[in-house]
Length: 395
Image (cartoon, rainbow, N blue to C red):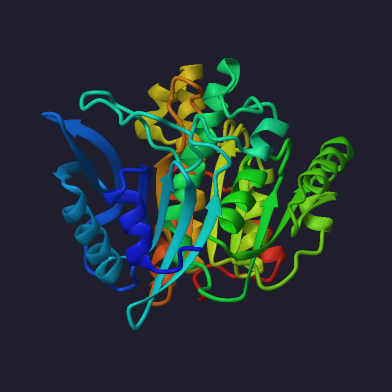
């Protein structure tokens, strides 16, 4: 079994078996604009090369390297910039985790048969996913997204892209999770559990971590089906509970809290619970923000609010911005990201919040108050936080 980084890189690059690679999880406190690096094989003027795509927040740059140059570049990036790498070859999948002192933890899983026989032509644009198309994935097959052979079902392609987009966003904050021990994940309003299964799969099989993931939903039929499916797939540590968020005991500590498309104030219930249990990272994609629709009024913008579609869109934007401001007042660094393409759904915003020290929570609460007063509005999250004994601005 291959156990050294040099052997892994030689097998993938020099032997020409690499299908794709990805480096991510920037080393804490490392000053770099990079968020991740993706690698794919290609042919340039008849020569086998490897294209490195360097992702920053606002741009992507590329560089084509020979096999030996690629090995040197991968080693350098793992030594200085990134903590995690995944490499997919025709024979095996490798997960590499770097640690202080120049040591590496490497996990290898053999692939039953070669997944590709040709290097992609130089001008073919191939999207590299965390869960690649063409590689059998048991949970995606069970959920009806893939065939047993690993091909994405045409009618489920949008769901396939959504799952991978979500995993990309989760991978960007994976370095915020504990480096050792068991990771605790809560999915509020897990529903049909596509993303619950995907997240558990990513953390356990791709990153090689011990994880307890709990999906919570009000509907007995979906939680029962999800639990049966998890058991059938042998996904240890994945469990589902039926009940309202407010009535379910959430274990402490929680490292990652997820709420995806929970309708209206159910998102606020999830966010309040996540804050109350001290979740390190929160990923929330709100849905159906109706609470403020009748509340909104602001004399400078009343003419906009006369139009139903404008009021609807403003309601969504204002609601989610107020949520973000309250999370900041509770000690979180908050980003608002595009979750999936707007042509699939207009509700495509994801709130990503990471608990941080040094945030001026009192100042953030003032910003929340100013915005709420401007719109003559208040959101359920503020009262829910108070009910749970969490006071924004006091952290």
